Amino acid sequence: MSAFLAACGSNENNNTASPSPSESASPSPSPSESAPASESTAPEKVENFTVSLRHIQIGDAQKFRKAILDDVVTKTEADVPGLKIELDGVEDSVNRFTKLPAEMAAGNPPKIFDVFGGSGDTQKYAGAGRMLDLTPILDELGLKDKFLSGVLEPFSVDGKVYGLPIGGNTEGIFYNTELFAKYNLNPPTTWDDLIKAADTLKQNGITPFAVGSKGAWVPNMLVNTFIGRIAGEGTNAGFITGASQWNSPDVVAAYQLFADWEKAGYFTKGELGKEYGDMLNDFVAGKAGMMFDGSWRSSAFKNDAVGAEIAGKVAFVNLPAVPNGKGDQSSVNANYGEGYGFSSDLNDNELKAVKAFIKNMYSEEMQLRGLLEDGVLPSMKLTDVSQVTDPIVKQVLDVLNGATASFPHFDSVVQSKVYTETETQLQKLIAGKATAQEVGTAIQKVQDAENAAAAK
Image 1 (tube, rainbow, N blue to C red):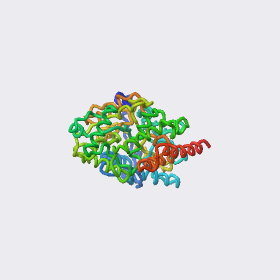
Image 2 (cartoon, rainbow, N blue to C red; image 1 turned 180 degrees about the vertical axis):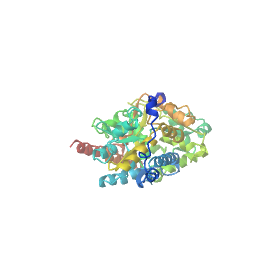
Image 3 (tube, helix red, strand yellow; image 1 turned 90 degrees about the horizontal axis):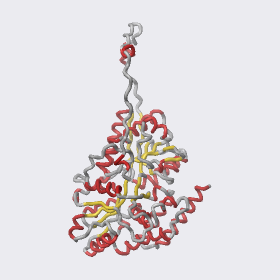
């Protein structure tokens, strides 16, 4: 997890032999050899063209990431004469589960688009011939060995790369240090301290965990970590091979723990009507003392960001060891699942634009900006992280350094239909319309069908 901290990128060998006098001093052409003045001064004709770019950096909470994208677009347009990039911002889940699948089925995806890695997204679309093989482009641009070990795997099929992760994240507990001090609570780094904090906050009229479960991917973050800790860090990868079962006792126990927290009143009342942004607002307003979220949220607590009200009053810790868990209790949820893909249907001009976009987006400058400005963990090797001064980002890095194992989020592993079912069933669990066992059984039914279809 901390490989990028120690990684040292090698400089390109730019040494070239000095030209000989005969090579450097060419004789002036005779008048008969000179090009006509009209030809030498005629401007080169530039063909104007547009390239569509689908992104999910919308809303105030994503403003830092959007600023990076805007700068990359500006550089790319400057690099490619005649290019105009048309930005299309779409909400994350709408793009992933509605728009992009429909466009892929119709064969008309955007030329550049935000995409998730894994069998349900990149690998499926690449297998259908809809995504550009980036393997030779990475060689051409000198990027082949610049990415961290393993991060390209969810974006690869049969050894060929079809997408590039923009960065990574881990998920853990943000907590309000001022509230914890007010009620004399220890940081939630042990299970006993976590439960004591949750109970104390609730007794004082403060929601223990801010949650916005209208989009079920939000509470799914916590469920995923419960599964990794209780059932083991290899569980998620086993769902698509049959080695793991959603209705197994250990996975059901993870859902049961979530249900127990629901019953204990640890989550925001009316959470099924709350958006992801509402969760942050409740936390910033002091209505909740903790929030289980991705490390990217660290950027929200800067002095000029949406959570500026509590800047300097927030800390980040890993979920503490779960009693009787079978997994490595220092393990972290580490994801490099979101990135950019490119349509396989490109003309020559569009291919030039794609190469320029990759060169500009996947540079050490932009990777470092993502870490410093938005808390996004780099997917590429960085030669210098001395500029990292944000205390929360440092805490995130401390969590990664302290981890001896990691596991992916199941949304980057299982098929899309399976993941959609996990969201549907979790919302039923939250609403009290399904038990933990019923949730596991329902998801496994879809998993069995998808695994069988993939085996044909």
